[in-house]
Amino acid sequence: MRMTPQRQLVLDAVKVLGHATPEQICQRVQETAPTVNITTIYRTLDLLDRLGLVRHTHLGHGAPSYSVDEHQHVHLVCHVCGRIDEIPCELLGPLGGTLRDREGFELDASHLALSGTCRDCLKQDQETE
Image (cartoon, rainbow, N blue to C red; front, side, top):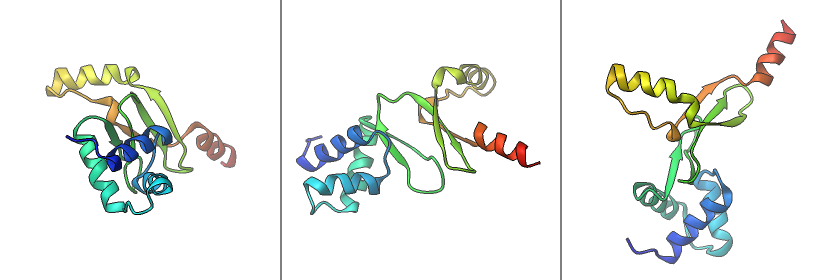
C-alpha cells in the first residue's frame, strides 16, 4: 500500500482524536484538506482497518468509532446517559478462557464494546425508587 497524503491525513486525524467517528475524522482532515470528502474518509478507514493500522468499534447505534491499534481496552457504553468508560482487556480473561474451552472461539476483547448502565445512572435510578 502506498501512503498517500490523504491516507496520512486520515491516520494522523485518528491518532490526534483518539476515538472518533468518520464524520469527526472528516472534519479534522478538512481543516487541512477541504476537498477530501466523507466517501474518501470511509474508504481510507476501511483500508487502514484491514491493514491493522486503525481499529473500529461499534459503541452504539451510529457510525463506528476508530482508534489507533495501540488502544487495547474494552468499552463500557451506558445506554442511559451515553457515557463511555474503558477497562483493560485482561478483565475479560476468564470469559475468553471459557469461550476457548467450550466453543473453540478465541475472543478479541480489544475490539469490543459492552452495553449496559453505568454506576451513576444505576445510583440515580435507585435514589428515585
